[in-house]
Image (tube, rainbow, N blue to C red; front, top):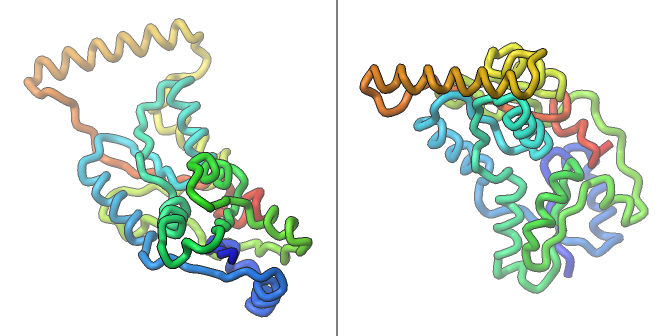
Length: 239
């Protein structure tokens, strides 16, 4: 028995008739999660933002997280990356552990290859992650044309009661970080930048000490980040 979980982006990019044919011809059983992981993950972000200090980066997109980490390391951007696994990973953990699926292998499809790599690195029992495009290629199937508009557009955090900035595409993310005033000013050498950063930190510590507060509080801001412009339908795992 082989169980197949199709990520929501990919599922909306294939006709119901074609999907049924593929499942039947390749002896696959489509499965879904019992728990609403979208709501669960959103609640985790809500709880995190209730105690956040400054900018927090959405961690659902691993490629966007890699970009943020580079900015943190190279330009000193003071931003916290949420320690919350992507929804797809939560789904896979449930499916891998479910007793009713213990008699078969689980295939978890992803909209991008980096998310498949992240999942496979977990080495979940009898569970394999593969991009939707690569999965269809393994079966000798041809993917249907991807839509120009995302079936699941940005806006996941729209109903949270915290300030949210939604960014998609590498250029848009980088532009925001540069213009936010949080990154170290361009044109400085590493030594100069490090010196200025140390000087600012010294001044900050003095202000905190003089004010009598143990920690300087900054307004929370959640950055919704999608590396692919306007949504995961542009990922290398579906196009």
